[in-house]
Image 1 (spheres, one colour):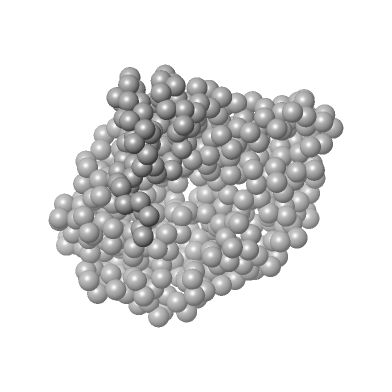
Image 2: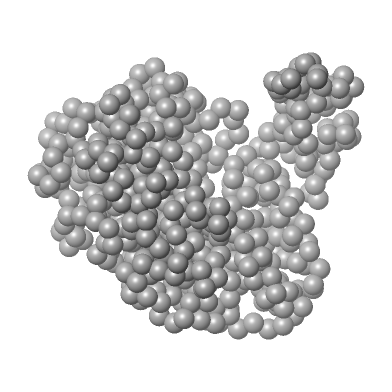
Amino acid sequence: MNSDPRHRLRVNPILCTGFGYCAEIVPELISLDDWGFPIVNPRPFDEDKLLHLAERAVATCPRLALLLEEVAPEAG
Amino acid sequence: MSAVGMELRAPPQIRPAVGTRLMAGPGQATGYERIDDHHRRLGPRPAGGKTLFEVLAQSGLRGRGGAWFSTWRKWAAVGRSSDGHSVVVINASEGEPLSSKDRTLLMLRPHLVLDGAVLAADTLGADDIVLYLSKGSKATEQAVQGALKERGRAGLPEPQIRIVRTAHRYIAGESSAAANRISGGPSKPKFSLQRSAEKGVDDRPTLVQNAETLAHVAMIARYGSDWFRRLGTQSSPGTTLMTLSGNVRKPGVYEVDLGARLGNVLEAAGGTVTPAEGALLGGYFGTWLPATLLHDLPLDVDQLRSAHGASLGCGVLAVLPQGGCAVVEAARIFSYLAAENAGQCGPCVNGLAAIAEAMNRIAVSDSVPSDLDRVQRWIGMVRGRGACHHPDGAVGLLSSALTLYSDHARQHASGQRCYGATVAGFPRPPGPGTEWR
């Protein structure tokens, strides 16, 4: 049982214009659709490495369209 | 294309109702029911507040705007955030081309709808009531203006109800789009981590409620929850308004008992003109049904969902004529929906356009078999990726047709000619709009 805080990525599809940097930075969680827009894996994660990459992707988005949300930790 | 967006066709002639609750009273010939007649027939509007809230919970009323969400739960969400300055929006924009129930209701019984809105404002601590109306229906607006003048002259103790008009667009009725428009912006959905109940018009807690739902509230406030539950089913109590079109003898708006079967409703509409090929239930975001299911189909919302993966939506039923083709009609509707996107989200703007282009080729049997695979791929790619549910509704409609008529769709895709496109009698989508205000 892991009680670390969990996070998940979300994209604001209105702000997003498909630069695609996010998919390059954290391909573990983001891939691009046929038109270059991000398909974001909504699964909550707690791995440090993923969190680091997710934070970098959020900071790099030129449109500030990517959001990192905190999710309640897994129940025991 | 007119500068104010598309014109609406005149509403179908109002027919006698199957159930008579909302539709009881004077018919169409006399115009809207005047306030004196309304009060004589139904009594004055009762008070709102905690008692009404409890009665509403007991009544089991579910929203008639398409989602069938529990009305008291929706009120509770707004009530939680309300501080006396919340907003009640009467959603009468009715962007669904196959639906005319809301403007029919407003043209006949405006005081019933307005009573319901005032009851909501009373109960939720709202000091602003807005009637959100599409620009397409002048007759509806005239009736409402008349009713509002009457209420003003009668000096009823209620906030002044104002009208905000918007371009007649398919998604203008979406909650955040309505709140956006009423706040002064375009009638386009917003992306928000908070719902309209918490942050809606001018960032105030907002109740966006379908006009028909509010009419039911006005009746429940007068007659109680037991009375309401005398019709309908346990999970879908009461009556609802349905708009019937296409292959039926007497198209129009009908008030139906939710405990009835769809066959009863078709009977009330005079039956079909030619043997039905199938039907679209729920509107442009609805589900295609085979002809064999129509007679016994329950109207109960939960049964429809669990047994048939279908929904009444905003009460629309459009019946296919004999020889008609659901693949063709679905492609036509999908093209309209693709053109009605708000231009905000990449997957929707691009995805729906790509699907529409392939579907139009498939519809005229001028495609390659892999076009169907392309369509399926993009349907999966687009789902859930917009700021609102427009892309989901559109691909849902298409997916329903392609599943029910999968063999026929494959015939289209392999170049086999289908003459369904030449068969008249299924309503054509209107031209897409151009304005957003």
